[in-house]
Image (tube, rainbow, N blue to C red; front, side, top):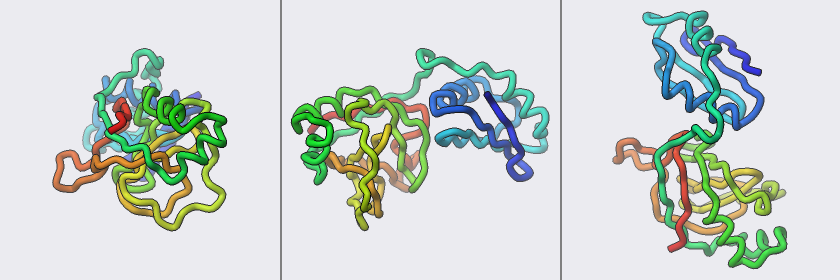
Length: 203
């Protein structure tokens, strides 16, 4: 079910039931946006849609969104980004133990998955990647680290991610990438955008 609420004077917050609907609706709206849309900001269960009030109104925008058919998973596409990884993370052995796998199998499963950037948040350049092998899905660490190094490749729950900057964090660290997730000298600064497809490649 889709629910659309005003968010300030120039935005609408679209609420759906799950992350798959967010991905499908975001794909459909980007392909055929209602008139006056300025930006889409997807999250885990919502999409914030900002608009130009000189072009449209909340009611016209909401009507256009309601008419949008949510794209099924097999119609979702996006740019492919390959992320080089050195699998030497501090939690690799613990993840292997928790999953009942060898460390080599954890690495194989992590880099064999087809990931998609569901949404970005927490910090600039932090993309939440869906598609993680269900066997590797673990809750966040009970005691977060006070500092996770930039470039850490990590997993938590149903997501994988690469930390763009050093920060506190409770994800399980599998490895490290030299690819900058956020670079203000690059256009665009973020290496990942919602809808992108991602593959991890061992280096």
